Image (cartoon, rainbow, N blue to C red):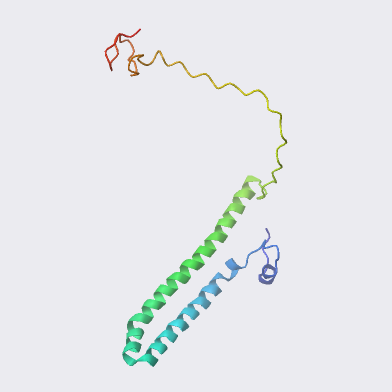
Length: 153
């Protein structure tokens, strides 16, 4: 994928080029300004209701609201940019592996005539390793079972 300019990416109707990684810093600045204005609006509304509530909001509520809102903004933007980085990494892996990044279409398999069902594989003979009476594993060189004491054949 070749690098495109901002306006080329903006009007790329195939979505082969993304603009979000190019403008993520601008989005963060704009969202910081928006959160600051909302905090200021909450403080002004609190002062309009009462002076005590306004002072409380100015000293406690406003800063807490601002920090929590900025955490949400930052996490959301980081999550968005992580998706784009994953996409770039997968593209790089495909490029190194010689892949196209596209999954070939799967054609439905032609119906086949039912043939003979293969016989299940024969179970290994375990009679020599285990006691016929209790099923405990035999010890090599022993004439009696260590589990039940029966003579071994």
